[in-house]
Length: 379
Image 1 (cartoon, one colour):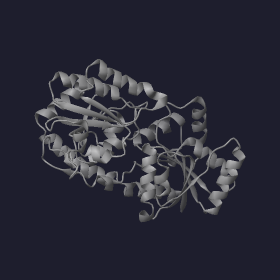
Image 2 (cartoon, one colour):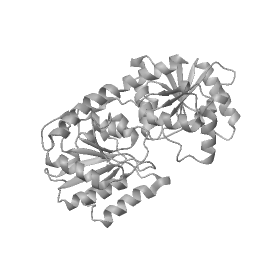
Image 3 (cartoon, rainbow, N blue to C red):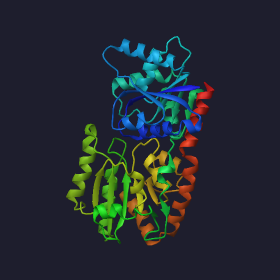
Image 4 (cartoon, one colour):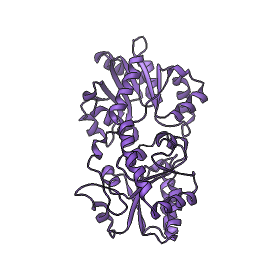
């Protein structure tokens, strides 16, 4: 089968990173695909060089022109199925393929909690008219299936995939807190932040978006500082304009509690694998993530990971077998677990090493593509 992937913008984000890894590995995994996107973004050059034919088709006021162009593109490339990454694109594909023998597949990357009224109307309409809906976790599938009363035979779970080749430089060592380090780049982040060698360096990854809970981490850091621990924490993730208060609240909290000398807000970074490999531990907090790519990437480099007990985090860490789980929005409980780690790292490091093997097998990009191909073949 030949698949056309429909995307919105090509800005940096979890969905775009996933699709870019899929496209770069498509040929090696016998996935025949093209990509069609509506808006440009910082990832545009990478997508154009990914090895998958990628075409920009803007959505203009003349919708009829868009439908005609998309239909011609699908026919010209002998497309068997369209795989949309947003409900709007699935709806556009449904209209453009009317009368054609082309299947419509939609992946839901998030929840509907932040959707506008129109967005929820589109979602409710299209979910029951696709040939298959894909979810990135069982918890997410159960949510949508129950809320929208969907035919369970058309709902599928395909965990997100990660190309772990970008982490191959990270090696587990026994230095300091027995952490993952990148050969020849061991002190790059420490040098950038001008940190003493004995300062614990740990952090989190994720843009400041609704559904994330970086403020609980800030509250935990306030408690940790009172314990006289020498540490520096890095927030890797951008301030998003339409939810800027999430970022600003964290910065203001750190300023008001004299934490800025212990905390750095690094913004969006292209060197996340290298940053993770230099951390002594990884801490994550969420309200309703659907998967948690940053968590899996941290597990992959073999560093101790601390996540809250949101159902999806329990799912991807095998009920805490491969990470330390603390109570949601409970900075005191997180502190308790973290102090145990500081007192005796042995069990935490063993768990971290086992986690690296676990996620590389379960969440590799090759496995993700194979699961997608299974869904396509069922149509």
